Image 1 (tube, helix red, strand yellow):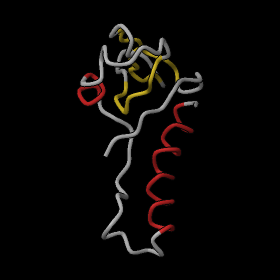
Image 2 (cartoon, helix red, strand yellow; image 1 turned 90 degrees about the vertical axis):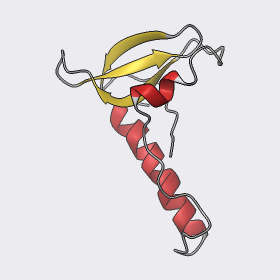
Image 3 (cartoon, one colour; image 1 turned 180 degrees about the horizontal axis):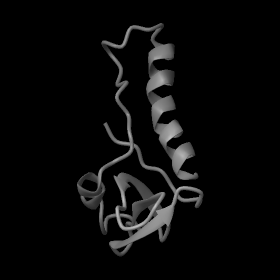
Image 4 (cartoon, helix red, strand yellow; image 1 turned 45 degrees about the vertical axis):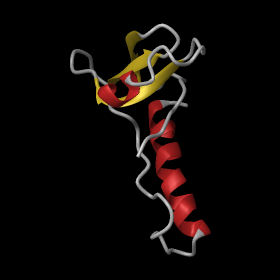
Length: 91
């Protein structure tokens, strides 16, 4: 996903859950979003995929760049919003 598409993916999880329950959100989770750096760090080293995952944390040293994490070895990197990476939503 690009960064925008990854955010939309997380948002759509919430919309789909609400739709599936005919708007009754008392029994479903409708607060899915992109993880912060701290939240994604919890998964570090527990996944063998060598792909990078978006965080919801903006990288302030560069314009239109967000912090990402490769879970297999804990490597942090920054990517531009048009790059294609993976999304892992949290709530």
